[in-house]
Length: 512
Image (cartoon, rainbow, N blue to C red; front, side, top):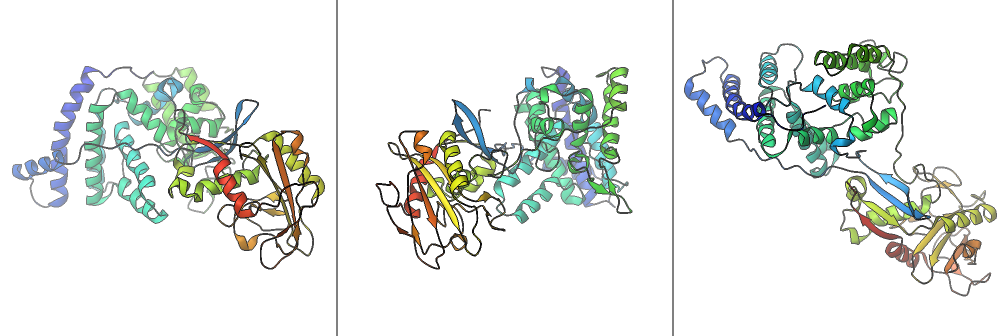
């Protein structure tokens, strides 16, 4: 179990680390600039001053978090859709199993609670080895340094506007080779020392576990535990903790959700696959287990049991978008998504809010009304008609409030767009801005009829209209008052504005 407080040695280590690292920095910078010239006292002193003058205050930006669209069903929140660039669920310190902390520290930074931000022995050895070009590049970074690097990488995802800018920023934040790499490493060390003067050891350790990548779009220990093993971080076993602790060194190689393999050997054969028992990950897990045993964190029996056990992932998918696990209202979901992305109320930040903002957005969807609307479409309207671009949609609006309660359509939802008859992601109840490409919508030359549907039985204050649309080359549909509808057809533009203002109840930041 990690220490609860910083030790006196740790405090002293911070001061000694600053002094000692300054000296190391001076020697390394001077050596890289003038390798053939003896390092003079004046040169070393100048380089030390350069290190001390590096920026020391690191701004820790908010994490990129998933945004969730929800609706109420019998008083409970139900997820309609989830959007994310990074699948992450931050946890508190007590919500992580102690064995996970032990596994990470034993393998990555065994002197974490003793040093003041940098492990002088490990870092100096790695820097000197890399400067001499001695084979494979070595790390040697403390948890604090790794946390700093992850904070800088996370900043790339917030600040960069294009994928190219993200890649370039990532390289600048992680490069460890050549003079630029040494400069970055020294800046990282300077930040790490200052970081430990502002935050507790436990805060830094937890911060690292919440920000770290565990392969693909899986970020943070909670999302990783659920993704790979189907358990919360608080319930991780020794073997599972050792597997995840091993992943942080090379997440996309050691991930265990790609049964066909994560890399290839010199012959082009898949490696680290289900067929080979995730051999690379198992080797790394064994290293972590050995370190834990050496540090006295686990017993020989625990070590042997975990070593002998095969790595058996229990992959849990967290689908993104309206094509996710909730199938009740994909077109309502798509409409709300379009509003968030395109409505001026979100000040052109809708896409970023969806993918990174960590919001919990409450919609006005009523599942009772939606089910009735879906049933009406299924029973009375075919999903396609041969020889024409055919479509039908209904929108249920609460008369007293204007809230949109349901949007149903005769087609099957397909996130990739309209690729075959009867399947599309376009929302026929919307317009080009809030629902899809106008050119791809059903033709509209013939008349449209509007009628009451059975949805009124689910909510007395709810009215629903069904529009039947036949081929048309140009122009809006003409409206008739067929059936028992006492009101004229609402045009798509009016419907859009109504849904844009009333399909969303509120948006709130995540609870933690």
